[in-house]
Image (cartoon, rainbow, N blue to C red):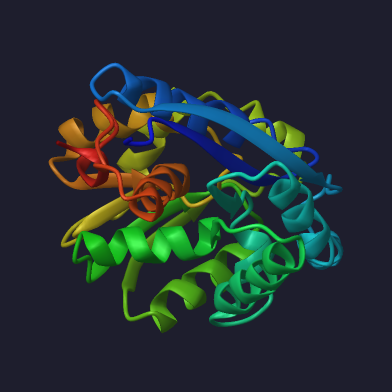
Length: 249
């Protein structure tokens, strides 16, 4: 019998209010055009301010959260913070995924593991992106670390705008439609892809398709890339209506 119900797990910063809304929203949109159904489950890691110290402390909770989600026997689990991983050093998402895999096995479970940081890289590579422009809410030093991380993966960042919002709760309260004006200040000349939000806490889903149509450039967010990678791991068609090129039919 073909499986039609899947459990989606996320390891969410305690101050994150976006990934538990945007990820389910995308999967609900998919449910309108495909037969599979999804439930959503979270484990939380303490983090309030987006500082190197708090990000590092949050990463130390990875294995506990992975074990908790494994107890729920989710089908796929992902971290729900990009900068916490990218700030720890080039290629660090691969180490985090290995730590998660080990915790899942120790819990006697069998599920796919991934990170939102790795999902952004994978999503850009799926689109064949060579040159991108991005927007992020971080302070400039953290934004520069994200840029360096992406460029180490072989993707040039033409330009980056950062809004320098240190309070993670404030990031989550930002109106996503402001991005449609923000992107007008972003240099997108020659870009293969625009990353509307390189942060899973900065809301962007309502702006993704509108920005892509406005710019004529394929547009993604880290949340969009996370949803795509989850569907890939589940072996399901990566289709979500009105969510940009990465999730187009």
